[in-house]
Length: 325
Image (cartoon, rainbow, N blue to C red; front, side):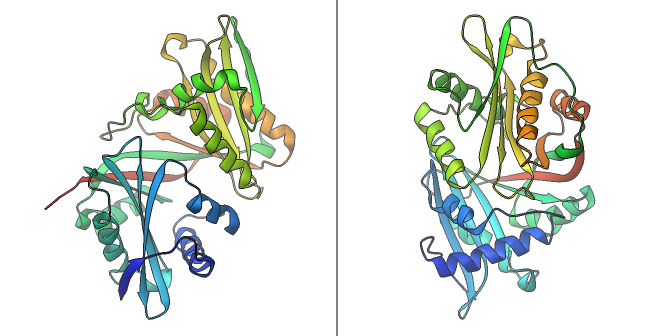
């Protein structure tokens, strides 16, 4: 087996990697529907604030699997590690070798590695952690429950208004006058929600970064629904974002929901989330919606349950400190 960098601009190699990513993911995530091939290529190739280093494992000319080390300019101390191995070549040490290679190629600024995995049951999560992650030095940082709403069959009910606030929904981008405030809120989503041992900090999204992210989603064929609550002074008090892929069989994903601390207690979180779901339902192109929240985020889990979301799988997030020579 030889491990070497994978060329993200080689269509033939990337097609093989896409096949492996789909097969590996579908083998452990029941009913998972991938992004289309061209949309996935675009995600890998578009500069979006992440530095990607991708390595592949070959036996001769056969790609056995690949791994990515992803490092954001906003959090230079953290590198995410992702590994996909062709199911026909799993349990032979390929994944471990790829993970180590991706770690070794990480920037010198890296102080910890973070990885995640999805499984259908807690027992499967435990087996993955025990048999693969722990031997590589990773330990659990937190778990999240992924929940799903069958939008086409749901009866969405609840207020999408709140006294003193105007709630609006926008498709493929909020107006420019709100983008700076929305970027500040987006940067607080992970920092203010429970996140176990991860200790995420605030990572503000600039208006330029907001536009780049939106442009990528639109170029991939996705439709983005964002709902915001604005107070009487014109300040954004709450925000949520739902991204629906071009393929209606792929569940739309709620990217985040947050109410600014000074405006909590008015039902704004539920109101903006419900408003975006109703707008997505009106299009007729969104059949299912998924979201996830930390298992200790009882507030968000309660909102999701009231709206009809039900658990479908578990995500574990793991981390380990770097060991530099």
